Image 1 (cartoon, rainbow, N blue to C red):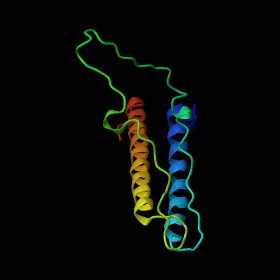
Image 2: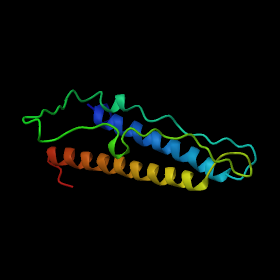
Image 3: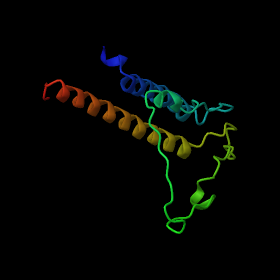
Length: 133
């Protein structure tokens, strides 16, 4: 069995490719922020169904005493929806550099987390195989 045949590695590889592609689109948005009529592009969210395809574990909670905790919806902004871009720049394209740079930073941090997880998984396999390095 090759390394890429393992579900965790193929899922992490797909996730990293998605982040690379998204980074390119976000860079195009930043580069064309002042281009009249340019419409920004972004990728759909990564399909997490592929990430959970290799795991059959489930998690549930239960209250042993009803007064231990309470659940209320709408608290803390968990039900908040992402607003559509309402700001139109003088160029008429609706791209806000601040928003795009926040997306770039978030994308970069998520990519770094995926690569770190990939590296740690490889190290675990090396230790399991007796190759301490």
